[in-house]
Image (cartoon, rainbow over all chains, first blue to last red; front, side):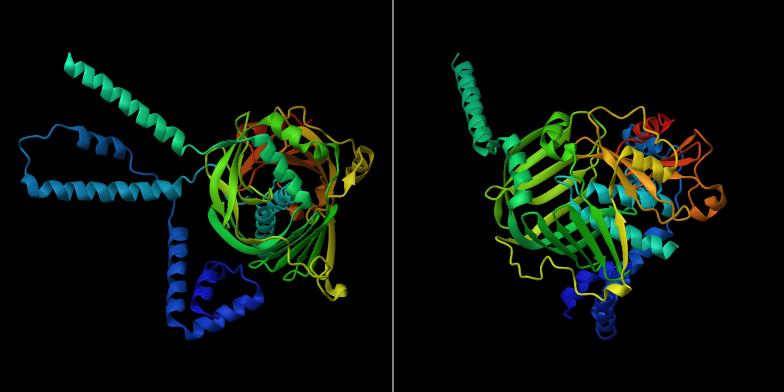
Length: 157
Length: 335
């Protein structure tokens, strides 16, 4: 297997979604190819990081604070002079970015939840399987989602 | 006076240039109804094979798969690279072969009144517009945008091959604007490169494979026999949805109790109501934890909202891609 082919399969390999044959080929390739092994490590690190983040509320009043600082008139008694201003802005920027990241992971959008539980997912699969026969249905997408939901169910049970 | 005259001239020139730019760059509108009809008919007559890239939202993440499709009239074969499964559709029957689980799922495709009036139903419930929109898989396409007249249902975008009517790309979009699923042909060949074995059953040692049947259409009487009592229909269903039949849903849980699947559709979106006899002796085992009788519990999932309610000795599960409030309203109307 070539590196570009392995790289294409790595996301599926990292979550155990590859068929047994392909999985074996990728595993064999990873034993001998350092750059692909490194790429897999990156993917796993990102996934691990996302999963490790605990939902947390942004500090109360953060946005008001940011807004007030931006809109407040500049006072003459600026203690650290012009050198300190960029640092404050940088600190605020980092704080805002951190708060945004926390908010992003803590409050996912309404339509992006997970499959609730095995019993529900079975009915979702039934619903999707029937929907896949509709005119203009994305059959491949619906069947694929049903297949991975079913695989997860088996793992959970 | 001269300055005023020049200003007026400048405004007129700028306006004329703007109009030329606007009409020159606007893609010519296409007849959306014709596009829809062309796509619908080609699904039953076209012959092609190609590679499809599909992206779906699953457990908050986007998952991608590559599959190969062979399509010839009413026959179709889809091979999934990442799940190792193959789906073969022929006429009114679809078979999913999963090499990993060694399971064959046979589903029947209803041939009901709704199917024969599908285009009218879509036109009644959705607004459509279409225009020429570049190329997909190297072929010129029309983009058909289908948005619901009643808010809350997902909308759809279809990129349709201008010559053959085949849908080369599609997107299902949530009311919140997020793309729920997307498929796109990376390459397509007309006609399909088919052999004698393309639509034949994969060669397998049948003794080792489990066969599961789903979607068999039931009459009201047959459905009542399955659940052992009269079926409970929702008194509230959102505008535009019509009944699309009653089917059998073989249930792996609930002590192997089959369920009855009532389906409603508005042409592109559907509502499923599953009714399963609630057997107290195996309630814990079956993992359905319905709230106490009459109450309704709604859960979010990527693909759909799920609500459950217990009515008498029935567990009722409602599944649809609709706002939470609507699902709750449907579920609470079941008595």
